[in-house]
Length: 291
Length: 325
Image 1 (spheres, chains in turn red, brown):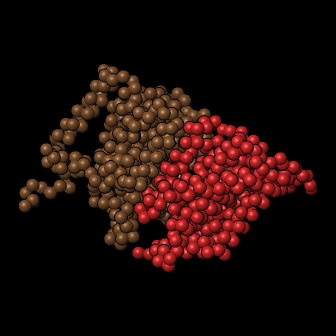
Image 2: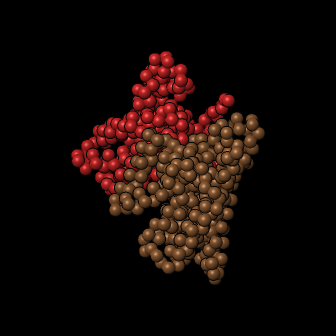
Image 3: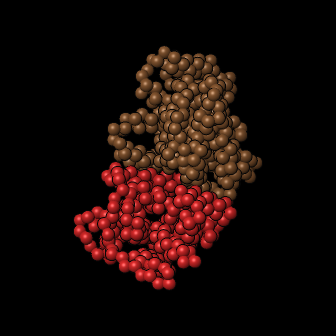
């Protein structure tokens, strides 16, 4: 029982990090109907940003988090401006291919600069507490707390602010909304900035929880988050969070039963099964195709 | 000057050129006319052409988006390696190798059939995700099968991929796909790209068209994988990852979607470019996706997009001389 509860804590920690990344996938899909395959690599780069920042000057956790989120948001906006905006009206396939290409460019650039994985300096000295047979570190609380805080802030932003309203409007109707005087380009840029910033936060949290970072993390971790977004119903922000916790639980509990090499197999099989039986995810609504 | 380019040559000329080409491949192989490096590049070129044309059937002519082609390659590569190393290793490569290649192709084709079934329910982005999931499942599945070496890879595969075999399979692929897309049935595949619902309403059996395209495409993907395995003599699950799929996508979109000549052009350009960029190491894999991104922005249909070099079009597509006024 204790073991089970301990694993549940680990699952929540992993799920929180996945949720932050999955939100970026889901927001962009909701607004642009485009799979931003480069997002996983943006997350990966953000942990390298954090690494570089800590090499230059050892700042406290909060400062590092904010600076990395800012830098990653800038990167997200640049990618949108340079690669995706010219393709806004191109066929959907072109946009997916471009996203895939951008992701590979980021990944391989990082790989060429830093061919080996890097050991992250400690950002935060964790304190561990024992109670009722469970071990909880302050790092875990920090990770879950930061993620949940950011998620609540995002939910507030989308539901209560003017920009959030504009995002929801563009997601509903991309043709009429610009006619109503909504600055679509600006709103889309903000969407990318927020999505990337959340990925950046995830990068910092991931690097402090699992302090070895490498260029392949975008594929290994980022794409898991993508799977989470799809399981939850891509385009649905709350679905992304749900999917992330489901996936975190599946991953952690798979490893308790099967050898860890089966983890990817189980995760992607789950994705395939969900897509077969519930093609639009747990919370997604099917798109009605009109002729 | 351009007249003979706009119309296909007499059938005999094409056949003669083809025979000459195959004879040249045989001669090169038999008398060692080129050095090992050139031979290696030529075989890679053939394999790339097979990969590019077969993926083009799904991504170009049918207009879907699959990123799982490396998965079919992996299936073909591993099954053919099992045949040639474990099951029929006593056989003479003369008959055993073609059997292994066909076996690899059939294996990939069977899985392609299943993936085709899934494509009935979803298309577009979701189909892309399904093919991605398929690729990941194949890769991590193979890593968990100790019989084929798991993550360490499959060692000791014989060097059976000769230039002649590669050329034969390349011609066979081009011939099959040309005849498929220019057939009455193949127009149904193109119709699925233009508008699936309208095609259905016009009486095109879109399910059959999709299944056929997926099966044929994955069969030749598997064949290319089998040739690839017997060229490198060592395969490893991490070779068949998303990067491999992206390489094939670069070839398809560089050469041009929905075009045989484009596929050949794309595969050729990619093969030579990739050899030329070899000294750059991992930076090569920065430049190639960058080319893909730039292509999508500035020339989304590729060099030959939707156009065809007349020599690859069956003669019946051209009006007879007396029909013309």
